[in-house]
Image (cartoon, rainbow, N blue to C red; front, top):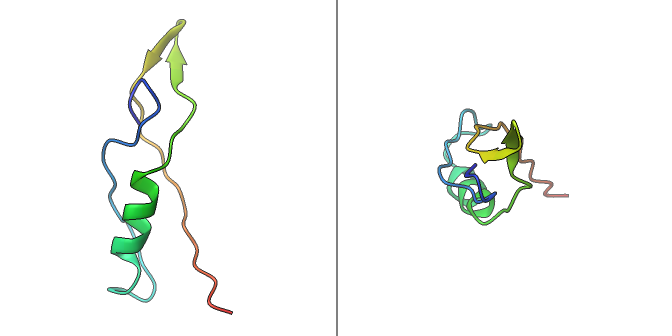
Length: 57
């Protein structure tokens, strides 16, 4: 996550079932915006893990 809160890079760590939803999940997360992290009052770049679940019921 960039110092402005934009998603810079998405990596799917795990998928079940594999090969079905990875692209859709990554594309969705790429468009998200986060509150920027800060360190000593300055906005900083950070890594974050986020679970994405699909409910097909």
